[in-house]
Image 1 (cartoon, rainbow, N blue to C red):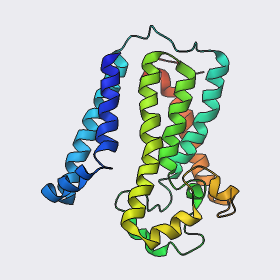
Image 2 (tube, helix red, strand yellow):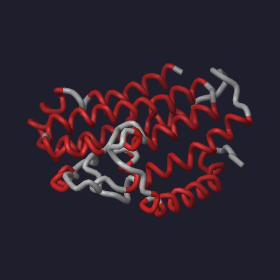
Image 3 (cartoon, rainbow, N blue to C red):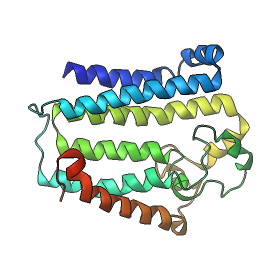
Image 4 (cartoon, rainbow, N blue to C red):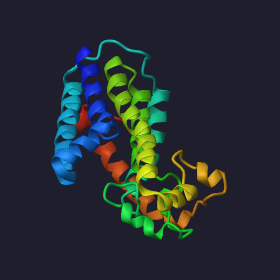
Length: 228
């Protein structure tokens, strides 16, 4: 259990603590932007791989809550929405992605945010949040709470820190984009700052359903747990 906690802290520290602190600037000054990104990627992959490996090795004896059929159903309902956001985020232009800040030159266009970015400007991160919530709900053992809770914190806090960094570095273009979008899903739509365009969602929805069906089919070979 202690190992899982340490691995979770390492993942959070290397992803959030480094990239969102003054240490990033010092590393960029010493290594250059590409050198920093290379080192950051290697460390991130190492800590992520270690946490995933450790999760597969830990026995599941202690439970925070007991798994029940209703909780499995809830997880199955959540997962298609997780895939819709996570996969849909790769089908649209999004200046929150690394290296895509130049897209903000078009941010004054009212329809610059399209597809799932109308729902949230951080679709991949919120997809991970929903994935983590679904698996937390369905499992309930302490090891899973630590594992999926780590990803919940990583992506949830990550959206806030990304916004903070982009606002500080990108100025007016970012402000225009942020004014038409929201971090919290559907908030900009609810406030009238954007609108839901269903015709822009059929491709990500179709992709999400296909991938979800494949995941359901292959889940037992990946995790050893059959979900249907």
